[in-house]
Image (cartoon, rainbow, N blue to C red; front, top):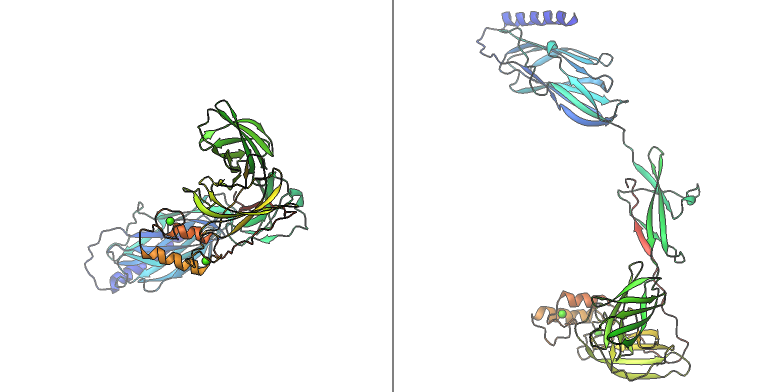
Length: 511
Ligand SMILES: [Ca+2]
Ligand SMILES: [Ca+2]
């Protein structure tokens, strides 16, 4: 009923304009259109939603305009000011009726045809707020009821609206997330019983947060759990856990004896942290396991190739690997990664060796030896007494002196993880027992001065070039000096302790 009254008023204005404004020829027959911009969007509860109302006169000289916008009052609230009127639209609005109770907004204006711009004119903006409650992904509709749009011009008092036009209806998706919830704090423990009031919370400052977790050195190896509690901004606490296997100390081969059984070779290996089971290889050949314990293993190489030197690789049940050498002709092996921590392709001659018996009455012996590509010390004339402790000092050309301690084994004594610091190439007549910037400068000089590096001291890996590979080798021990020459006599210091197991975990509430 009320709309009929306003329609009559509108028509009065139209007639007044028709009488007052000088007649002009109007050819337009196009329908007018109203648009909602945007017509779709996903918002969250409590988010604001601004929707523009645009009008297109489509070449009609529009004198009056009335329409209603309906909205889903259970999901949207029309805020004050309900509608921002825009200037320079060519319309003068004099009736704006918002109602959250009924879910509509009513607009009534007169137009000045001379000033109504062509194309889409923004009449104003409706300000909505998404309100609870709602279902996840619920749709809130905003519509122009077609039968409540009235537009008129002097020559056509009832202009048509195209009911099929785009954006005549808006459909807005509202998610059920009530505003912004964030993860504010977290705390972690090895045992869930540790989550008491006494366990402090830490700020959760970034997504994802990286937390370093150090396992106590005395924690036995095996399957562990890391528990994490997250607290969100509403105070809700969620608890998660991740399994992690804590590995024991790295295994090592400390000795190996060779025996022959027909065409088979039997390896009698002594070691540490080998675990209760494992597998063995010599180069690419799988060995047959006869016996295995934490400190020893006996393996068979069936139909072994003729040779006196066998690289051995043992893998324990946790996948940790120990490398070593079984050789008939050598009593001491350093492993294959003595130089530049990479497998060597060449033997190294002129290595100064000092062997000092680390026991009462032990002697100090100097020899010049060769380290072959497998890491075995050749030309060693000094006999070792099984079970006795020794200190060995080695200094190769271009390397620093390095001292290690070991216990002599029957067969091949293996010294695990032995590396020589490489890079003492300055002064050029034999170095000074230091790897420092002078050596780096000498390396740079050789690096820059040409492609072929035959005979150049900076070519540590002997590939004919001085380049970044050689620098990577020098850099590993940059800043180091010669070790002190070892002295005989015991007791020798115990070997360095095993590395502390560490692990990183990335606590994230999403996992
Ligand atoms: Ca030097
Ligand atoms: Ca090189």
